[in-house]
Amino acid sequence: MQGKLKLGIPKGSLQEATFGLFKRAGFEFRMSSGRSYHPSVNDPEIEPLLIRPQEIPRYIEQGILDAGLTGKDWIEDNGSDVVEVAELTYSKATNNAIRVVLASGNNDSILSVKDLEGKRIATEYVRLTERYLEQHGVKAGVEFSWGACEVKVPDLVDAIVVNTETGSSLRAHNLKIIDTLLVSTTRLAVNRSAWEDGWKRAKIENIAMLLQAALNADQLVGLKMNVERTNLETVTAILPALKNPTISPLSNPDWVALEIIVAESTVRDILPNLKRAGAEGIVEYPLNKVIY
Figure 1 (cartoon, helix red, strand yellow):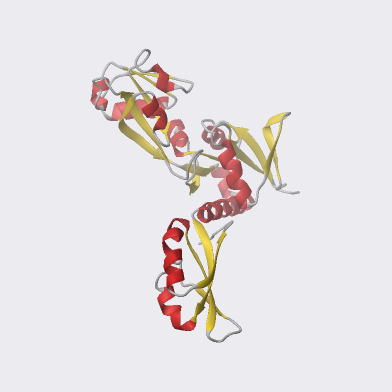
Figure 2: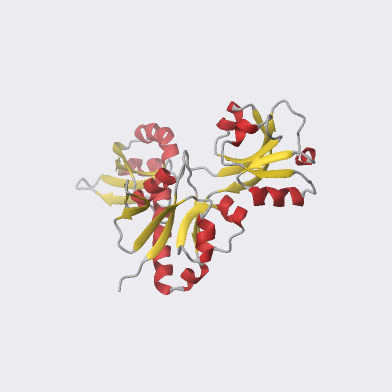
């Protein structure tokens, strides 16, 4: 009998970024309008469920899911006892971590957590916020909010605790960040019993490896070029390769082919220098997966 891994996929703002990451890793999800919580996937060993990321840690802990992708922020807010197998640094807009922050109006007198004594705070992170206030010895009212917390300041509440990726929404609503409660990235979390199951553990480890390989490749590109042997030392001195470049002989014994993997952010700076150093036939190409 073929094994099945029940895998939670975050529904909502992270959904498309997650589908995109899985596709680069070799797993293609497709949605059916009639089965909004049950996407199909081109791997018969995976049974995916589309669930709000806030709920995924709880369902993993309870064993309803074997594993799932969710934010560290929601694992902490739920206080869930799960195994965090991999940290996958991607989010809905960038590959950066998000921050869970305390914010209030730019023009108010709240400058630190101590100024929240007796105030009202709106947030999706009720438990995380309550623990934060307790750590600082502050008593304040914390109310759950179904998103859109920014519009509640100052008419309905004095401050909010929200996650932010770029800070643009806070700035647009004339809010300032007072403190950061947590820096959060996406985690591949696993039920403890599932982690002790040999088949499930191997499957989860394979998925984690492929997802991380796809994320690694996002930041890297390959470069190929031909170099005359007399220029080889000068050219290789320019290259910030992961390790040593691959050097292959050409039919002309005076020339070699050189291939490397470099950070994409460095290419615009090094390509002109490579050309000036004598490299020819330079080709840049994208990567799908990189496993260190």
